[in-house]
Amino acid sequence: MLVRRVARPMFAAWFVVEGLDAARRPEPHVERARATWDLAARHLPLPPAPDAGRMTTLVRLHGAAMLTAAATLALGRAPRTAALVLAGLTLPLAVAHQPFVDGAAPARGGAGGHPVRDGRATVDRVLGAERFWRAVSMLGGAVLVGVDHEGRPGMAWRVERARVDRATAREARAAVAAAARGSRA
Image (cartoon, rainbow, N blue to C red; front, side, top):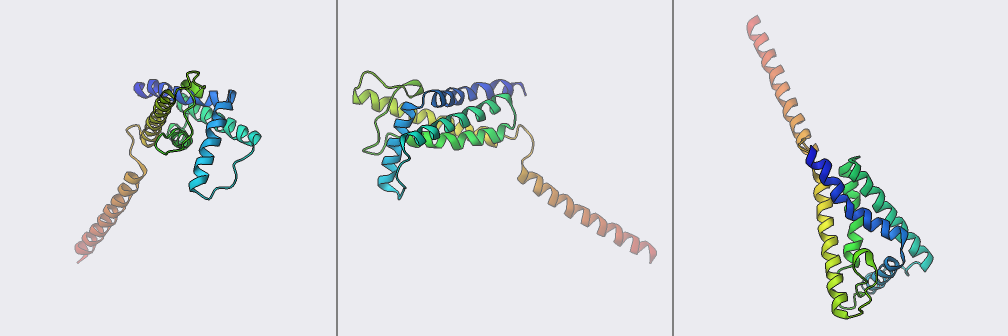
């Protein structure tokens, strides 16, 4: 359908930009990831945070995975799988940008996670909330794309239909056998 061919690349664009930014310039993303790890470690039994080099590598790998899945979605190759991978990769972004826990790391920037030069806490909080809601919105969109069957029946429907067809075939065979027995008598 033409709408999907146009809408998928448009939807994938945000993921491409985020993934490319994390892969090319991981520093602000590493800072956010470390702050999120430290915050989570206060509430969960986590091992110590990886060192700066490993955290940079993890952020770059996350960005490359997001970029790859977004490109796959944009090209229409395995779109459901690509969208569900994007949903899984976006969940940590939503957690990292959540503005609801006291002591959460301050937001670091506007588009692409670049630092805000203003430095005001209010601007940081607003931008952090904006990035959180954007990540949540994209997560929801990725889940929707991931469950889209493109007008074709899903697996649950196919299984149920196969059960009904088998039961109908059994009943038809039994009716034919009963009719054959009745005609011989």
